[in-house]
Image (cartoon, rainbow, N blue to C red; front, side):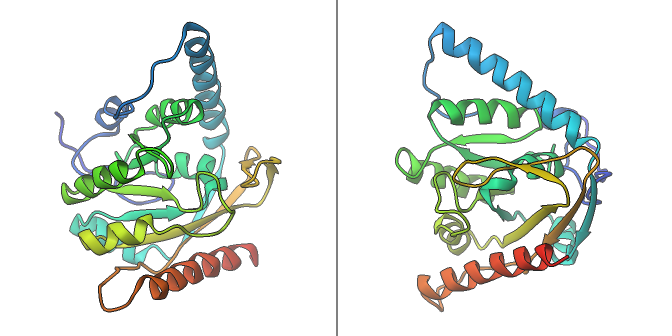
Length: 248
C-alpha cells in the first residue's frame, strides 16, 4: 500500500486517511450480503451502474464549489477523528462527487435500487454497508459503529430511504452516543439543477453550475439529554444550514 497525504482540489479537505484515491477506489466495492440477481437483472445493473457513473463523473467534473463553515471538520481531519456525515437524500448526486475517494462507509438497502446505488458509489471510493429501516437496519448500524471505532468515516442520507423529506432519523444520534464521533451536518445547494418527481425531489445539477456547500455545527450526542432533545437540535441544525444556503 502506498502511503500518501493529499488534499482534494474541490473541497480542500484531506483525502482518505493514509491511502491514495487509487487504493480507496479499489476498496470501494459493496460489502455485506447482497442478494443474488438473475441474468436480466445483472445486465440492467451493469447498464444502470455504467450510465450513473458516467453521468455523475461527467457533470461532476464541471461543477464549481464554494464551501462555508468547514473549520471544525478540518480540525477533525487534522486530528484523524472519524465523523458521521449527514445530508438530505436529494443531494446524493452532489455528495457523491464532493466527498469522493475518502473511503466513507454508507448504508445501502438489500433491494435492487440499493444494489445499483452501491455499484455506482463504489466507483467513487465509497464502502457500501447493507441494511435498511425494514431489513438489516440494526446489523448495518452495528457495522457502522465498528467502522467508526476503527477510525473510518460514515455517512447518512438522514431522511432516507423513503422519507418523509427533510425529516431526520435517529440512526446518526445512536451512533454518536455510542462512539463519541461527531455528527457533521452539511447542505449542498446548486444554483441550476433539474428536479425529479420522486418523494425526495431528487436534484441533478446542471453542468457548470455553482454549488454552495454549508457545513453545520458538529453534534456530539451525550447521555445528559434525552432523544427528544437531540432530535430537535439535530433537526434544527439541518434546517438552519438548508435555509442559509437557499437564502443565498
